[in-house]
Structure formats: C-alpha cells, structure tokens
Amino acid sequence: MSNNQRARVLREHNVSRETAESLDLYVSQLTRWQSVKNLVGPATLSEVWNRHIADALQLLALAPDAKTWVDLGSGAGIPGLILAIAGRDRSGFHVTLVESNARKCAFLTETGRLTSAPVTILNGRIEAVMAEQVGADIVCARALASLTQLLSWAEPLLTKGTVGLFPKGRDAAAELTEAEREWTFTRDLIPSRTDSQARIVRVTSLSRVDP
Ligand SMILES: C[S@@+](CC[C@H](N)C(=O)[O-])C[C@H]1O[C@@H](n2cnc3c(N)ncnc32)[C@H](O)[C@@H]1O
Image 1 (cartoon, rainbow, N blue to C red):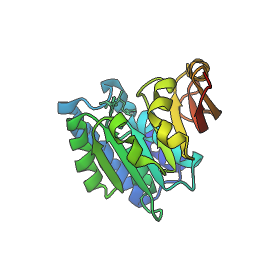
Image 2 (cartoon, rainbow, N blue to C red; image 1 turned 120 degrees about the horizontal axis):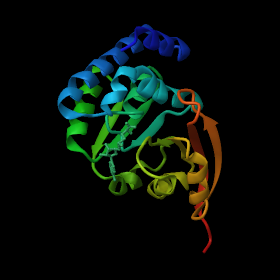
Image 3 (cartoon, rainbow, N blue to C red; image 1 turned 180 degrees about the horizontal axis):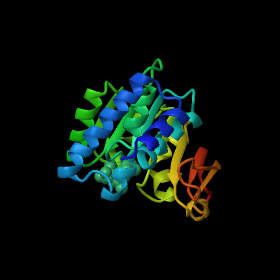
Image 4 (tube, rainbow, N blue to C red; image 1 turned 90 degrees about the vertical axis):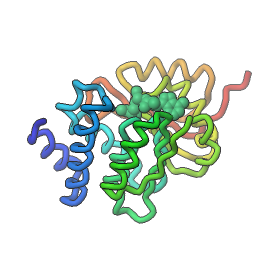
C-alpha cells in the first residue's frame, strides 16, 4: 500500500489527524478481515486509498450541508462507513448502512465501534427498510445495481426531497437513458475525482413517467 497515495488523499480531502487515524484503523480492519472474509475485490486492496477511501470522500464535498445519509448495499462500508468516519465531527451527522449479508454487517459493526463512527447498521434487504428512511438528506449506493433499479429502491426517499448520489462507471450516460424511460427526474453527471471515465449521478425530484 502506497504511503504517497495515502498522503495525497488526506491532503486533497483536507482530513484532520484524528480522522486520518480512524481511516488508518478502517484500512487495517479491512486488511485483517479481507484475509478471511473477502470483503472487497482483492486487487483493489493495494490501492485502497484511491479506489475506496477517496472514492467515498468525494461524495462529502458534493453535499457539504447534508447530515443524514443512507448507503444502500454498503458491503465493507463503501462509501457509507468511510463517510461516517470523515463526517463524525459534524453536529447531527449520521449514516444508515443497509446490507443484507450478515458477515459484512459483522465487519461494519466492529469497525464502526472501533472508529466511533455515527452509524446505524441495518442487516436486511433494501426493499424492506426504505419506508423508514424517508426524510434522509442523501441516499447513496456504489457498485450495487443499475440506475433504474436504484431509483426504484430509493423512490420513497427521492420523491420526497432526498438527493441521490450514485457513483457510476463509464456507462453512466447509457444508464441514465435507460432510467429515463421509467422515471422523470432532475440530474447532473459529475466527473469522478478518482477515475476520469467514471461519473457520479446526482438525482433529485423523482417521479414515475406517466404511462
Ligand atoms: C458489489 S457489493 C458493493 C459494496 C460496496 N457498496 C462497494 O462499493 O464496495 C454490493 C453489496 O450489496 C449487497 N446487497 C445486494 N442486494 C441487496 C439488497 N437487496 N439489500 C441489501 N443489500 C444488498 C450485497 O450483499 C453486497 O454487499
């Protein structure tokens, strides 16, 4: 793991010493659990600061005033747990992590506790818990499903004022075209800071296309 990569990410995201220490703890937990639980793609661990930490942190800058976040299909806590660690000094900051896999939830619970991250971990299926998340400021999800599926899951929130932030790869424009067959929404395609081909889709004011 490159110390240069770590230093650059911490500098570019203006991370405090205390938060850097907690992110180090997150990385050491991820590395320790990875050997037995395979939480992230094995090839990505050597680039964890850019591929995972910076990729998550860039979302904070897109919603500087948001306090309540919901991360769908959180996996190893990307982006949700990383956001909670970085945002934990902000008053009222809280992230709900929704993850159906129990062993990933065990990792999230232990690592959330060790890093004092303001998280609630919901070990269940997204479709079963969305109604209780209405009113959140932001819903996000990385590497989970097509944009059409994400909008469908997040409909109870996105139709009531929540903003969606969905990191997507190079097919973001095609995913938007497909989603616009079923949904009407306001959207921006924001260039990713970690991958020149990737985009973050920001969605607001969702409604279903009239049949
Ligand atoms: C490919 S992983 C991505 C994890 C993480 N967001 C990331 O970017 O590394 C997708 C995760 O979503 C979870 N998942 C898939 N469908 C789900 C559902 N319907 N409800 C809750 N979690 C789900 C899986 O267990 C898995 O951990």
